[in-house]
Amino acid sequence: MTRLDALLLMMVLIWGANFSLVKVALRDFPELAFNAARLVVASSVFLIAMWRTGQTPRAVSRPDWQRLFLLGVVGTLLYQLCFLAGVKRTSVGNASLITGIDPPHEVESALAAINTAHNHVSSEISLARATADQTLVQSRRAVEIETLKAQAEVEPLEALAGELAQLKAAGSEALRAYRRYVRLGLYEKASRVFREVAS
Image (cartoon, rainbow, N blue to C red; front, side):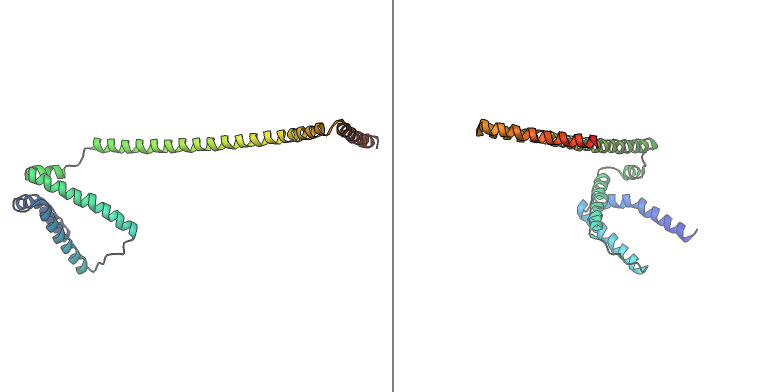
């Protein structure tokens, strides 16, 4: 037997004896106090092992501290509370069997399919939302362009209406002078076109 085999055998013995020892200890100790003592002893042994092997903890960033806190709450606190409550209320054999049972392949496949379908639906929803947002932006731009075109067409008419209103208010003499000016302008344009054609 190699050293690695011996260590693995020790791990199996410790893990297997864990249920029996916890069951016996919970007869005399409250659940939370017993679990706190377990974690303190385990953490101390772990730190001593790190020191003996020359390993030092690495610096942990602020986001990593948040993830570690969440992992500790879910993976250690909640797990230990459920574990101790289960061991206290059932037999050692039931607790060890339930803890050691892996979910069937069908359950893993179903969970993987649910996760895949969820991701697919989420991507489709995101794509539809992006398409709808793009369509709204294009529609808004089209409305703005048509509005500007309509304003450009209406402005000369409004200016002409304003001039005619001013001419009407000024009297018939102003209207005749305006007509004469328009005719002169047309005559000059016609003369220019005639000279261009003749040349």
